[in-house]
Image (cartoon, rainbow, N blue to C red; front, side, top):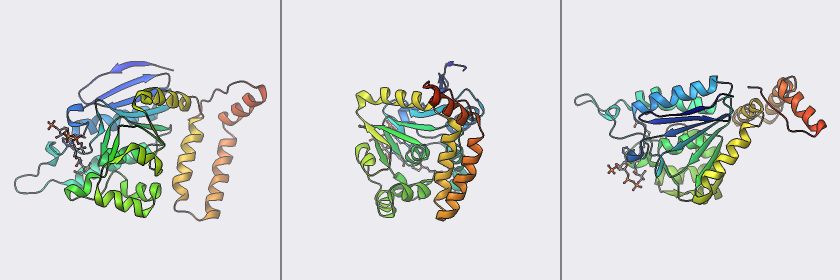
Length: 270
Ligand code: T3D
């Protein structure tokens, strides 16, 4: 497993330690909102993590007091040409759609460590992740309605599935700040932890996921997502197909051998 020292650049910090690749959005003065430059670093970093078999879990977090405030509304990409309005469709197609698809199809689990406010596409980036842990002082805002847009970065797909239509509409239409504790109690995120315990909890859960069978976890996510548009029997069929594939793979034989030998399994499939 190759550990690399933190690599620093303007808008994204990358650290790889013991199979955990931590990507820190790093524009704290603007609450880590997305510029073209930051998009240009995050997506390739995710691509590299997906291709690097020594990476077993990805953590996305933010520097400073925010997680991510969505699109940087001052970025040149938001300025139109002359009298023409900004090409918002292009920004979404070029950056947010590939980002949501990439996070959602990573071959390893992705943890959102929400250290502070997550707004607009920043909130939905977190909800794209598999496990969302938030500090108690963090909050989530579907800020889109306040600036005359609809939710993007997969918010329209994710929110009703996570919390149901009534809450999804309340959150997106009103655009109120939702404290992390309420987000956890309505099932929008996995867990809210005290600020003092936040870093330790993120570390513990990431280390735990890094030792788990990555391929089975990624297939679990895929089946859960697929099943939302399937009937009962079609979902049973997909379970059987994927179970058949995993049953023939290394991690299953290792897992069962380790169980019988009463030792810790060492998983390696991707
Ligand atoms: O092309 C497209 O636009 C399509 C894609 C859309 C995706 C989206 O994400 S749309 C939604 C964009 N995001 C927002 O509308 C959120 C805007 N921000 C806020 O509403 C508030 O900042 C927060 C509720 C997130 C936090 O409020 P608060 O009071 O804790 O902090 P603040 O004072 O507002 O912000 C601190 C600084 O960050 C401030 O800069 P300053 O005055 O200290 O120099 C503020 O301007 C800056 N900042 C916060 N969010 C953004 C931002 N700068 C640029 N863009 C932002 N989104």
